Amino acid sequence: MDENSLRRFQPDWYSPTRLLSSPVDYDFPGDRFIPNRSLMDLDQAHTLLTNRTKKLGKPKFNNEYRKKMEENLKLDVEGRPFRMLVFRGSPKSSRQSTRLIDEMRRSDEEIPLQNNDNRRYRKFPLKATRALDAPLLSDDYYSNIMDWGKSNILAIVLGSILYIWNAQVQKAQILMEVKREHDYPTSVAWSDDGKTIAVGCNSSKLQLWDAQTSKLVRDLQGHQSRVGCVAWNGHILTSGSKDRAIINHDVRARNSLVCLTRVHGGEVCGVKWSSTGNALASGGNDNLVYIWDISKMSSRHYMHRFSEHHAAVKALAWCPYNSDVLASGGGIDDGCLKIWNTQKGTCISTTETGAQICGLQWNRHHKEILSGHGFGTGESPCQLCLWSYPSMARIGEPMRHASSSRILHLSQSPDGLTVVSAGADETLRFWEIFGPPQDGCSANITDLDNLLSLKASAVR
Picture 1 (cartoon, one colour):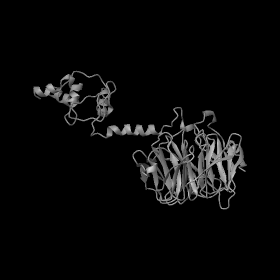
Picture 2: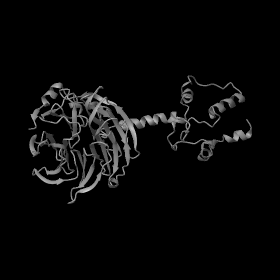
Picture 3: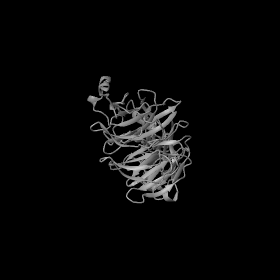
Picture 4: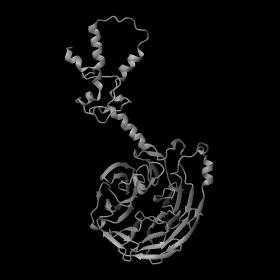
């Protein structure tokens, strides 16, 4: 080894100046004090630390052998400088070094929103904690006739009557009744303040009712066929109809119609506003999902058009902790639960459930999503399934109504702890599935406790 070569390995070869002159590119900067394990030869270090079983005596090798050993310790297999501990980033060419980092990031995404959560204390119910009789509940996939408002009052349509059930006092009363022949409510939605209910009817009427006084506030015009879905965004009320139209109403104005958009090729089955109020998702019987910017709806210019479903899309739900994430569920010929990035217009994941998806609800306390299913040929017909996000692995065993009737609607309590499902068996069932983990003393709840907590009463 000549003098110039030896000069290359002066003591400050690992200094910042030396690193800047290196031709190797790095993914991310290193740390001044914490070494990066991706560039360590841990096997060699372990050998040096553990193989000295006895005290070394006077070395019996010449200078030439010493130089060879120094080269092996100071140079890697490619002839580049090497140290046991280095303070720099890993080369871009090495993907093995980032594998553990990616796994840790995926693990972080699985951590629930609550810092004090412990999943082993969560108990998933095998049965509903409460059941209510709901006679004359319509077995109609295209309607949306149940909503749980922020005032803790559940609105449910049974036949031609709209009932409101106070969850706190557990008492039901009639809010309104449609007495016209062949007419009945087909969609309901509470306003953001929990005081007003929007009611869409089979006859194309759209009405606003005051829940405290049980009086009609106003009629809204614009549709020509049944109004199957409604959604609030502050003072804006959005409705979707069988006439393929989406209408935005400003309920403060005398002339409430703000814009009318008709791009779906079939009945509009679902409309949902994002938590920020800037984006609207609409699903239709044409198997399409549209994403709208609130400022551009009047021009009919949508942000994205998703065509990956193969059946009608009724179930839509925006992620509560990421306003750019939307979940959608397809009908009986599709059965796919899809997660979308609405900012990029891409599909994040697709989960084949094997059954019609009638409703979706995100868990606000854990990174999970609940799906309610109708008819199908897979493992999840007529069941409730809980999925972990973003892995979309199914959690626990599926839950179902007492009979094998399909689950038509899902809604969530204001505190996000309870989900109510409406089934074709004409019952409402309440599931305490979204709650935080229980204390250790209450984790071992028995089946007898579950049976004692089951109560049945009639909505009417």
